[in-house]
Length: 377
Image 1 (cartoon, one colour):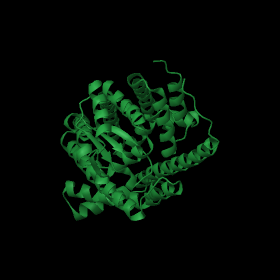
Image 2 (cartoon, helix red, strand yellow):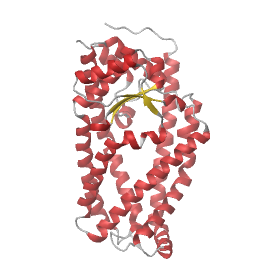
Image 3 (tube, one colour):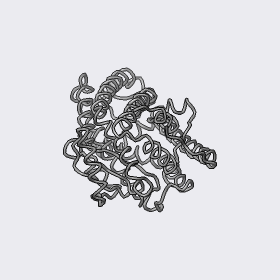
Image 4 (cartoon, one colour):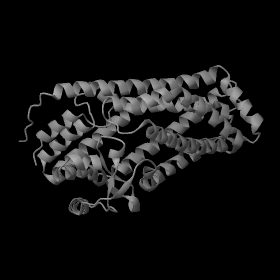
């Protein structure tokens, strides 16, 4: 049985990780509730009506007016949330020695993410309100189907369109490791288009690896920070975990769950807009000034399903861990990889049970290591 050497610094490291995650979690919650506060204020102070009137005054066409309205709404929300974004995304990461980015590099990424999210948000909002105007009874079915199709397309195209916007990638130069990982992929029936080096060290000291994409875009990506600290055997067990998701068709299961939640969420929004738009002073469900109401309902629904979706995710991660151990038969390498990843990523090894239940998409590090220690091939 694999044993772990006592590490005197472990309690200090765990206390440091706890501080890091507590501060990040508090900042994220403050950011979330600040956004909720902005939406509530827009709804109940008449500000949303005023924004709609301003947008229609500049662009009488509903498509152009909605774009102006969303631009103003985004500017207000981002101006208020920027300090928290800066703190949790840059200052906190530097304070705990996890980031290598300069402020201007971080700001560039923040602006790119903002522009991308605005473009996608605008496309989604235009589709929703077009459907509301044209098909007031069935709009939610059409929009849910369109959103699901977009999620599937994004899963396929993200590795070649989105990831390169923020990180640099190149084919892995270590031919021996590359062939080792490709052989493992072939052995479990996962066809991949190559192994790519993910230049994460330019921005972070954290480490990661993933099997990304779908079909012709599926590829293995390995962070250069992972290669710096991990042996080939440890990297193989990490990839075996990722391949476990493929073997168990976790992408398909995730899409199925996302589809069910999307249709349920749009139906809930449909009912809520029909019931509350006029009492709140809007000109019916198709009045885009009720967008804060739509976003509030969406946020509340997401918050309610968060513990359940995370529980589902932890179940998938446990199965992938079992697959990695079964496939490689290398318990020591698995435990070594977990130990090193926990240190590099400043993971909290033993979070409070309620914190893990609500916020964690993976089992805690200690649970994963304990599972590996008890594993019998």
